[in-house]
Amino acid sequence: MKGNEVDVSTKKKCIMIVDDDEAIRMLVGGYFEKDFDTVLMSDGHEALIYISENRVPDLILLDMEMPNMNGRVFLRRIRYGNAKFNKIPIIFLTTVSSKLIVQSAFKHGVEDYIFKPFKKEELVKKVIALLYSNSN
Image (cartoon, rainbow, N blue to C red):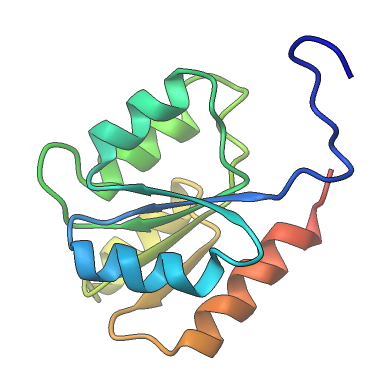
């Protein structure tokens, strides 16, 4: 390989975890750090800056309620912004259980929704299914 070429055969998939609760970020990051690259962000604004620098994760686990930029605003920015970013699979991890909000999240392109507190097995199963169902 030369220059900026990447050997995709050995490149780990990347999971971005966006949550204002550091304990949740560390817990969820720990579930995946052995088999995936993990990126931990504390709010949607920070995550959007990261992605806008052309560092695109393969999947995003996104809290809905955060300061600076909440998950719903982040979702709309990703889905209706640069076409390169609008296909990133997103799973909401949240305590918000309003039926209307859940329906709105699906309408705006979230792939799945998991309520806190969640079971590790449920989260891992959904992440693996999304990461490898449409593998490119």
